[in-house]
Image (cartoon, rainbow, N blue to C red):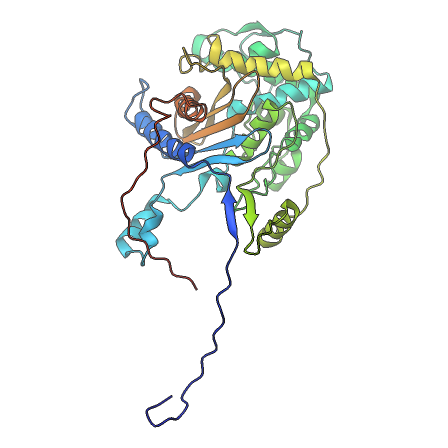
Length: 419
């Protein structure tokens, strides 16, 4: 209204409506430890702290409750400070974030060849289909010579010019014997291998409540066809050790490791513990899932339900225990650790680089959490096991002064703009 009383405009207002409160599954202290341990590990790899330096580009980590599927921590590096956006981000700060690609969440949007941490899929598929048994011992002679046009060698042969010798499935996981898994994959064929990989959620979006999740790629004749390639027996051998077209997000991998640890039961990764509405009610999980699927354009997955022999699961888990306990590929990292851990290291070729993986769960006899760590061009899988060790130690209250809770009373200016 002007000074003479003329109406010059009209504004319609509404009373503000209180929103709902979302309770996340993230454990703030575990998240802090995960971010710090990952950052320190990447720097240690770059600086040659493991005897040989690699130009590690970044990495990520995910921690899951093996029974509920709740994500307890998830970190991606390089990261950024969210407070940079408060009050408007500067051009310099935004350019730095953009240059480092810090907004890219490697844990859900990145897709990477899993390498040897895929081998538990091959082991369980081989055992459940009868291609191998828990008692059988396969003789690793070094080079797999069944096919004339493709004769891959076990990594042990490349390093030491001999094979591992006779190994059962637990020993093959402990020593990460490529030859054993070449033979297992060749016996059962790619169709059976992909059937079990799909059951563990590989090559499929998990449905986590975040945008930009990748489905990854599961190695198969169909995947080869999309690349205008013909599937071969050699591709099956390569797929059996987590290479070929296999490429998955770390969130898929932690789901799979959680399922192996819990005996093969399905879990769905989630970041939402509950939603508390303003009227005092609580949204059901069905409502939440329906809303998430609609917003993210997800379809209901009707995968088959598989059951596993406890004997087969135990043999695979025993192999993972041996990785950390009995001269396995990560035993040096977990030596004198107070909690028994099952694990698997992996070093996956990615062009000229070698991505480093560690996948594990704890405690061994009654698993509660699973952890997956991936560092881009990290060199060796066991390098990244230190991150998992720090996370497991924090989760079980083993860190020094972990029982001393200190409150941060420092005031931080904060402005939130609501549109």
